[in-house]
Length: 117
Image (cartoon, rainbow, N blue to C red; front, side, top):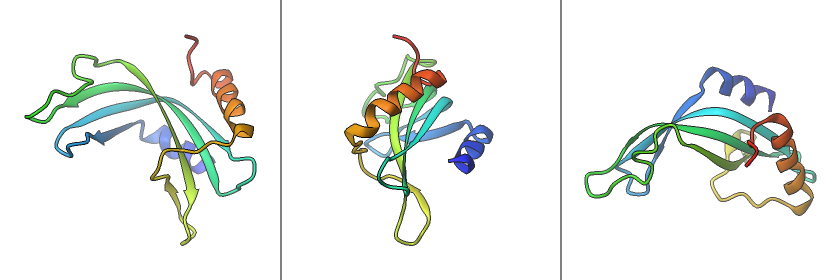
């Protein structure tokens, strides 16, 4: 978690590709909170607060984020150690055990990652 935290502090922006694989959006990672799963040392959840910085829609569709530059969104994901021993971004929607869900949210609220609504 410390290594990923240090890397994210250096590279605060990233790009996501839309479902058509033709358009993309650029994001600035504003804040994030890591939380290790209670019964798996090789799985770490993350909540990120992101800000949209640009959006390039495909020619056949408008990007849902178009016109909302500066909008804040949250992303929940996870890192996991694969069988080759390398940490990688989870490829599926995260499944968070009940024992970890509220602690993850509480930790993110305390850290200021999740803003009061």
